[in-house]
Image (cartoon, rainbow, N blue to C red; front, side):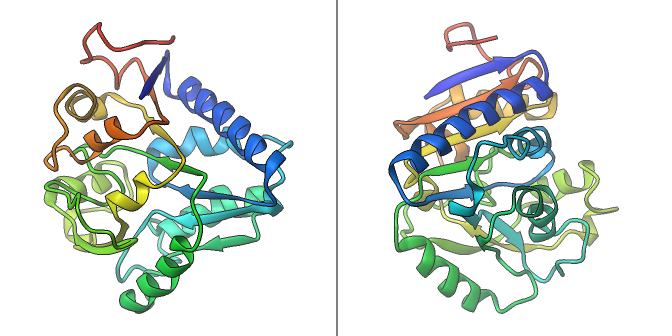
Length: 250
C-alpha cells in the first residue's frame, strides 16, 4: 500500500487523476478495453474533475461499473449516485459502456444483472473512497469480509447517513435512505489496482484507524492494507493524525 499526501484536496485529486490516467493508458495500450469501478461523494469532486480533463484517454474503450447506490432514490434526486456519475464522469468523458445501479429499479434484479456482468471479467482499476465511519463502498462496520457476492443489499448505519447530511446531500437524516446496494468488499479487492481518494479533516480519524490500525470489519477500509496494488491519496488534513512511520509524499 502506497500513501501519498498533498497539501490540499485539489492537489490530492489532481495527483490521483494523474496516476489513474497513466494506469488507464497503460491498460489500453495492451488491451482492447479497460474496466473501472467509480466511486462518488464529495471526496471525489476534484479527482473526477481532473480525470475528465485528460484528453489522451480513449474513453470509448472504457467500461464503468457503479460502486453503490441508495435504494428507492430516483435518478433525478440531487443525491442520486447515478445522477452524480452521469453529470461528473459519463457525460464529461463520453463513456458509452457503463452499468449504473438504478435506485428505483428492483434491487434483486439489479444485483443479478450488473453483478453477472461485473463478474465476467477482471476489473483493471477501482476508484474508491473511505467514509467517516471507515466504510468502503457502503459496507459500514461491521463489514462482511467473507461474502463472494459482487453486490449486496446493506443497511446504512447512523454515522454513514449523517455524513450524507453534513456533506449537503440531504436536509436531514430522516431524508437519507436506510438501505443501499453496495459492491462487496471481496469484489472491490478483486480489482488489479485500487486508487483511494480521501481528503478533508473529517476523514482523519477513519484514515488513522484504517491505515494504522489492525485489519478489522470494524474499520472496513482497513482491508485495503491487504491489496498488493493500492495507492491512498490524502491531503494534509485527512493525514493529520497519522504517525511518522507511514510513507509520505508531499
